[in-house]
Length: 271
Image (tube, rainbow, N blue to C red; front, side):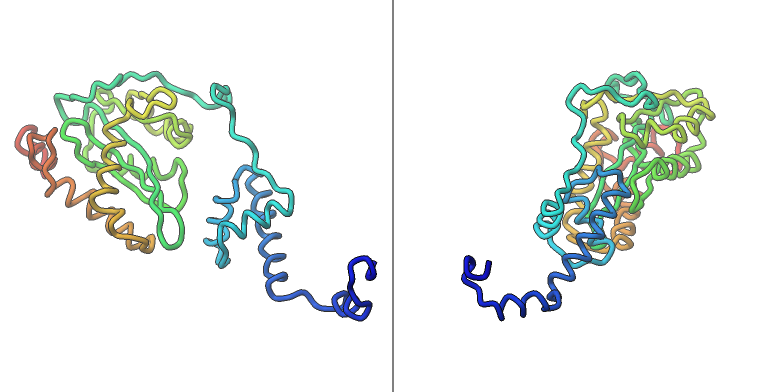
């Protein structure tokens, strides 16, 4: 073998007895961690999400390195369902009752909600918002490093505490995300007699007000901040959602007034 490969016997034995380099050891440690993490997540994440998890766990690595290690280990993420694939039977999808009727004549008649993600130094920060369509006012929001139904419940509790609505007269609209189809969220709303509505699958226009709010918030305020810590981003979210957007920024739907002032002048709701 040494003759075929044109390698000296002494060189071969030196290589055979040599300890792994620091880089090789680091790759072995990282590779083992990536495969263990993928197994914990049932093989669903791709290399990009596993890279984010590795960075959050303290590994100093690039996306390309993670991809190379996973490929060399033969790892492949589970394929996404094909378009038109049926949802799991336990996922309850509700009709689009709102049907893009975004013009609302009184407060606490229609609330809409959505979730977005913002990149921070430690990884993603997920933000849920609840808007009252009457004046497009932000009435509830929550932020968390974990994207789950809990973040929706936190935003809803905040909205409910601030508005104290009559649930029988209220319609809550969202997309078909797993956070909104979760039993805990549906139970929380129906226990308060709130009507439920969901966008059609893959149709962002059915929830355009919430979608456009996040696009505006990112463009005007959050993205120009650059890469900051989650705690700092939470502070900026609290200021923009609760103070600047509601009380300073003029909104065309609110008669070119800030939403809080518009509600105070037209519906007698305290700013």
